[in-house]
Amino acid sequence: MGTRTTTATLVAALGLSAAVGLPCAASAASGDPAYGGTAAPDRGSAATPTTGATAPGSAAPGGLKAGSGALLGRRQRVTGTMAGVEQGGTVLLQRSDGSGWVTVARATAGRAGAFTATWRADRVGRFTLRAIPGDGTAARTASATPTALTTVYGAAIATHYGEGSYGSRTACGVTLTPRTVGVAHKTLPCGTMVEFYYRGRTVRAPVIDRGPYANNAAWDLTMAASRALSFSGLDYVGAMRVGRVTLRRAG
Image 1 (spheres, rainbow, N blue to C red):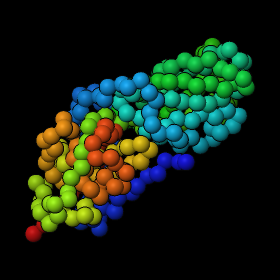
Image 2 (cartoon, helix red, strand yellow):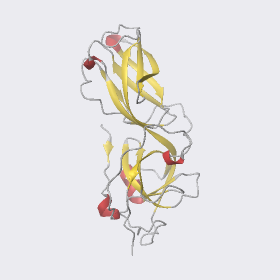
Image 3 (cartoon, rainbow, N blue to C red):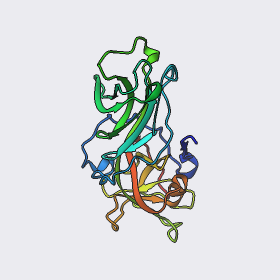
Image 4 (cartoon, rainbow, N blue to C red):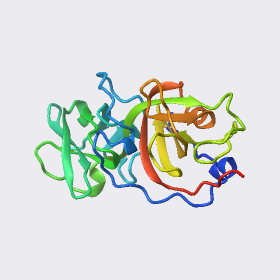
């Protein structure tokens, strides 16, 4: 089942008066609170998403499948086939870094060039992954190089809030309602747009409030944003800044 992306209707829910800005740079330090705080500890398992968007033209003769999202510091499982690589041969998994390709994992090919590789997501941003033969030679044609797109998000604990506070005004001047899609953060400027990732779902929400102040959490999602993610209420989420909007303040 493909990743389900929720596009929040922010104009109706919040009265936003500006468009989303350009994405941030495709890298960030592990401790930057703007990207979700410190990296989540590795629990020794692959990322939970199961399907990803394969780059156009990469389906034949090989293929590459990666989760559409990964959390910084966690391992992500990537599978595919590499045409021309015999059983027992080496396949290199590489990611783009803006200036070239960096090898992030090695795998051993099985029958028909099938392989499974695991890499540890080490930078926040949107990346292209590709597989090439382990001897370093490039594929004979561009279409023979299997590629996939993935986004790496900063990882931090999140909670949710809102019930019992509807009708009140947030620290950023927004009237909180059951339909308000937003998030509280201790320091990010009001209106900072953040893309959140949780178990294959994404939603974009602006900073509209201050907090949270419990559970060692970095983010506090409104109930509407939490429902859009099918969020449990206390867990690690992925987060990445994607722009800035102007909030229409109440009153």
